[in-house]
Length: 275
Image (cartoon, rainbow, N blue to C red; front, side, top):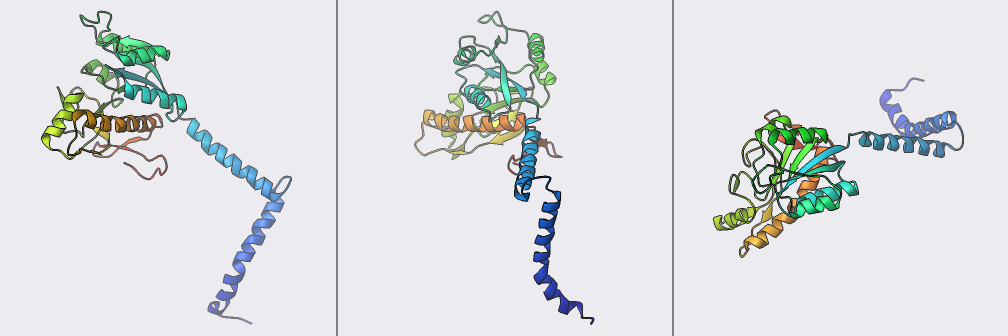
């Protein structure tokens, strides 16, 4: 006898879950080629996970050139992250304007080729700008990372590697940046200004000092009785972490550009989020 749908709905709501389980079970028994259905679906799940992990590994491992003028602590952090696997890339060459600096010595100890640039009276073996570009091409460099390099990057290199050269600066740009703002001078200026916050900035490199698009920043407090050395140490700890995080994003192709020309980093955990 016909019943209104409103009267039958409670019945179907009650039996639908049971019907679904019976259907899935029947499918499992029918489709599993051998062994138990649970083993079959475990194998399928494992296959899906493997394919997902494989798609990540198919991202080309990037080749990095790092530029330093001093001890190269950021360079060391990046290279160590590459070795440990948290960065999908390798430092294939180090460029420096001081052949005896700590960063160059570390690179030599690790078997990383060292190139002198630019050619000066103190470093007569340095390369010209054109030769530098040529050598980096020979090393098949994907990205150039400035890590405490105190010379202005030549126009030839900027044009040869558009949107592929990055620098880290020890203040929250655009404040306390530009020619003459480097090292301890930055931290002294921050304290003298009365600023309550500072921190590292990673930015794209253009043909001027510290004027390229900002990619990432990390804020640290400036304490009431800070010395420049204390503030520098606090900022440097964040530099090491931030530069590795950004380098990892670069090597995983997670840098995107907003319509207005602002670069953003896509979250690794949630591809729908940007920062």
